[in-house]
Image (cartoon, rainbow, N blue to C red):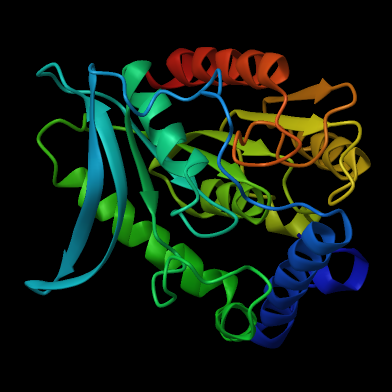
Length: 282
């Protein structure tokens, strides 16, 4: 996430500043609020990774005949051809709610793929680690979008992924990247950002496909007002947009690996997400 001038989009240095600011804000927010990523004592209500109807696991992307990096893919176990959805995390995909999001998409009849945009880092690298900060600081948003495109190319090569438009779901910094991807790629037909980092009008001028934004009123990392502003920008340019606001929900309320997980609101938000994707991709 970013604030005010950190969201400048005037060249690589500013994009690096944005991402570095995002990492620092995430880390400081987690530390100051005592937020840690810990297993739940009981089975979270929205956890579906063990559902027998889903096939999932790590995959590797290839380029010029060689392995590069990969991601986490989930699909319905039943034979068929399904619409594809890209999942963009705001942190490492080793945090279980990201694979779970892919599995939940598979249960809803999609192929879900989360590209590992933090692939040079070990899975256990903390978000406030110096190695993490250095990686984020040295990668522009365009670098990350290139990695996401590699995942989309992998999806295109799978026999179970339906030809045609894809959807994209993103969280925090990933929500911002989801909108940037929707503005840049003709392959994207629907965009679902959760509590996205702030946008500027010129960044989403070409975002014309339907957008459904989710944001909590108690979000202390990215104020809900930022999504209200983004909604206004999109409406002003004629982009179909829905803003879903959740009372008393903090940042990461969908993530059962986080202290601010709210099962009832997570289920509601996910039902809305699935209905939106089915409406625009099926």
